[in-house]
Length: 376
Image (cartoon, rainbow, N blue to C red):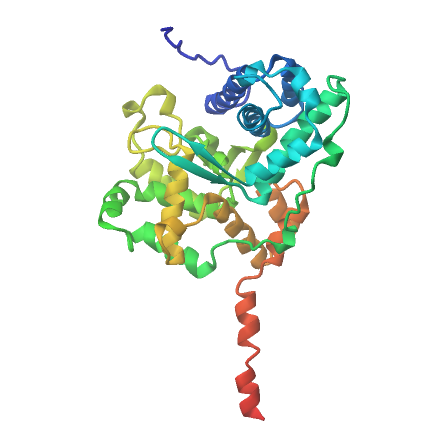
């Protein structure tokens, strides 16, 4: 068996090595999927690489691999036994109705594995993305004259809820205070959770404060380095989607919790492997925290803020929503909040502006029929 070679970085860009590594990891995952797919899609792979963001490209390729697997195992549209063996002629035979049946299949399906049968269920948003992935593929094949018809116009529409119809999930101020009290004092933690908290409380608090102050995306926070921060200038750098860099100002709360974590709790560099010395947030094993570890941490503390079960805690994205609604609720400009959160379109930020804390509660509390009746 071939020994996997060590990956070395020759980095002459402004990006830190961990960002380069993350981008490379996405590209490698894309390549592995491409190797499983038919060769006649090679031009499509080049098209995706040049026209969509890396994570979107990965999602499209995953959807297309699943579609090809579906063709083999659930239809008679191909005689191929492996996805790589599917022929262009097989795609030429596919009609819009076949794709519509596939999307309907994706609503709920079963996958039998060695120890269990898994039921997968997709919401309309997930179905819409799968439809988009297949649409992009067939439009490309038609545009490059690999197939004779553009079947995408006959794909069934998927009605998604309007943005204003979605309930914005965010912590209210009292819930934020309860969450911060838990991470500061260890209150409402189980005995086992408190044992870990004793070792990571300053780290955990710094993570929560950064999410709440800047509305960072999970990937943006996870990739932060110690060298990302310039405390003398009162700023730090983050790497956004689409490869953008953004400088963020530090406030006193953030400086305070970061200084406490870095100076009093974070492992000294000499105790860390070279690849982890610059990582800001470390696990107890001295490695850069994974997105999953951060997600579980946030879920734990938000569940305390919400006074609910651990399984019902919020994701980091809900802390992004909390930052947005809190800033707008304190009278800040919607355009300033848009810039802080890196929303491409201000209409996204407006969703948070429309979400007013306790609006339903205030409405019904000021509309008491029994009181009106007794007055009369």
